[in-house]
Length: 430
Ligand SMILES: C=C(O[C@@H]1C=C(C(=O)O)C=C[C@H]1O)C(=O)O
Image (cartoon, helix red, strand yellow):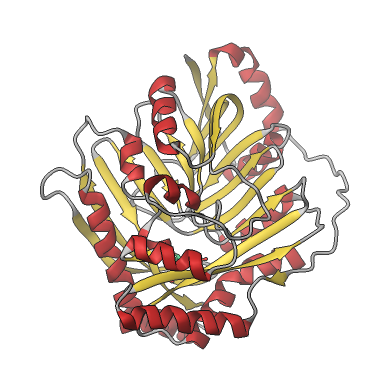
């Protein structure tokens, strides 16, 4: 069904830039970049999928079943996204908060043209219907120089959907739910947005990616919908019969001065609030994975590891399990979605309270973006630290959040949100 060719790339960083610039001509684009971040479970350094041959786009009703059928019928590479609101297909929940972006709840496509980069090796894989274009495209990409078209960028005026006073009030309400025993932990998020703006999405992504260099960066385009993501977090990956989930909970500041930076890392590692919020989510993920795991196969491979990124230090745990080969890949997503790190514990009550207190429909923020392989393996990130853009409606949005537990201080949570929002602010205002 596909024709594949291997090429040697002498300058992978330059090639990645050319590849993404060349890709802009297509209506559907997913570009994934792990930015050479050292990690145990990485399959590629970068992947580009463009030009849909087939696709599926749905709201949440019956979405996982539709995706399951689409994946089983195509048995090819599929790239796309799951939005947070697919929770409504899994549980009796609803999403009635404000939405300025209007992304579909679920979108996947089977790309005609695919590129996989690992080290100096590039694999190009084209559907046979267009494999006569492969060599010519490769030559074009190598010589690709972006045309300096001046996009009439507008001044971006970023507003905050929830004021600081209201934020503190809402966190206090969240805390009263926790003291009452309704929940132990919930991730509360708020939106920053700008109206009537036109941005150069490719250039904005390049800037955001350069100042963050995260392992799960994504440039996504579906006609007028864009996601420019600098996510450091993996939601879930499947490699044969092994499932890997890597929730992040626990965030601390970076400092230029080495001593202060080390201190910030140590404080994160030892902080009882950050550790307990991480461990509660590890328990939840263990429970989620147990729905599809073979007996006694759920294991915590790493608990509360500290990882440094350009913008922040993060605490990450790795939970693994084994499945037997009759389990459908979509079933594994359905029984773990939405990811524990963006919801809370217990999950359903946390999602209900989140819906009540937040003011923006999460949509693709707090969802996942990734791919299925032809044999049904997959890899998905968590959509955070991301700019979402509806070019037709000239609307830009980025949300940030943090985990609220009994040990939370509202002022500190507010500061953590601003810290996470800093990179997005910086690139949009520069
Ligand atoms: C909600 C966000 O991040 C989530 C919350 C984190 C935390 O509370 O420490 C860390 C990673 C994410 O799971 C965000 O970046 O917007």
